[in-house]
Amino acid sequence: MESPLPTDFAAPTVTQLLQRWSDGERDAAARVLPLVYQELRRIASRQLRRERGDHTLQATAVVHEAFLRLAGQEGFRWLSRDHFFAFAAHLMRRVLVDHARRRNRAKRGGPEARWSLAEAGELALTRSPDLVALDDALSSLEAIDARKAAVVELRFFGGLTLDETAAELGVSAETVSREWRRAKAWLYRELQP
Image (tube, rainbow, N blue to C red; front, side, top):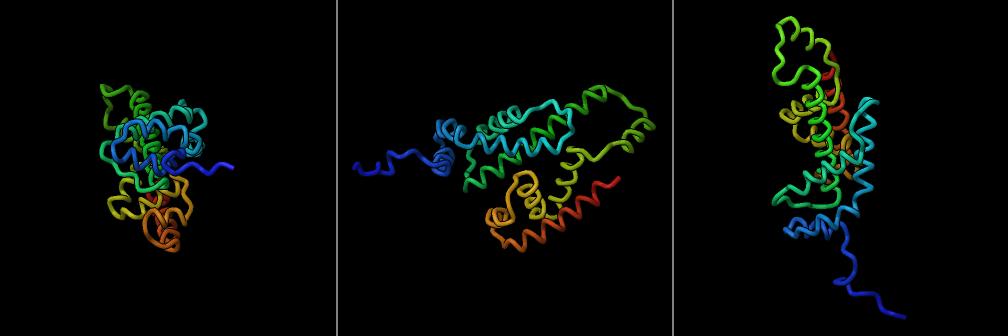
């Protein structure tokens, strides 16, 4: 019976690859992608389910765009797998928000479009609470209470459990539960017309 391979020769774990990536090892990013791809697709699919039905982006495109943005992070230190997935979820949200903003700009005639004051007022009244509005509200919440905004990011966009969110933020699960309830109530009030 052969003895197991020493750890130096064993396939590196995702956490080890993330640490190597943090240390500047360029090929670690390429090696980690196949190991995390399915989880990233799951996160992207969950975020897209919250979007309108005729969305033009697919989960694969969201994952690829987010991973390109992840790979472009210089000097970023991955603290854990959960930290990586939470940040990836944040970038996927940014991809979707950027896409929505571009779509809204194009729908309104692009940057050259001119609106009368009456048209602008009408447009403001008809704006529905979509991803852009949620992003604006979340940015406002972050200015008021960064931890509540982080809880929303991790729970809603990252899909982390209460316990995973608590571990990521270094607080108790009860604190996360309380912050989650308060953040949802605040966002609900903020997104009302």
